[in-house]
Length: 176
Image 1: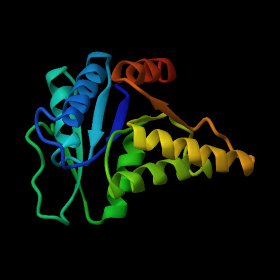
Image 2 (image 1 turned 120 degrees about the horizontal axis):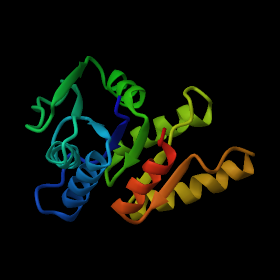
Image 3 (image 1 turned 45 degrees about the vertical axis):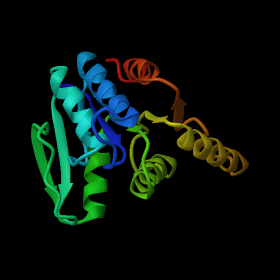
Image 4 (image 1 turned 180 degrees about the vertical axis):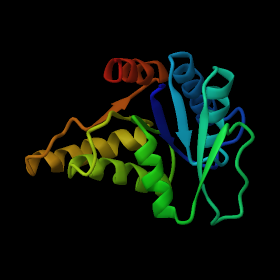
């Protein structure tokens, strides 16, 4: 059974924007390395990663919630509908064998905080978490400083500069 990487990120980027292309390349390279992906199922980074995964031969699972009147993107190969935003976040976390946090806003911050807190408080088995973008690097650095003061694990979330580094990270962390 293929491992699933859940990808969090903004619904705003459109085709050919840098964030969209990064997500597309990530989805495709993950699929080419034997991973399926899971996203929130809508537009922007979610669409780009799903498109890349499908074009790379993988599955793109979309975890959706009907709060905004949006339609799933055309690249989703399997949709799982949720009733609430919190149910959606739990399902995104529950399905993931690993997580990538790409550029996004408060929704993406909520997803990062949830998966990090689940790992930090032993509410789930520790799974690899990768962040990509300068904003998350700053947040990870600041939070790790606080966690160090509290005597907590500062290795739960890793920050990366490139898609290739992220793919290599998951290949290392999730190899059987």
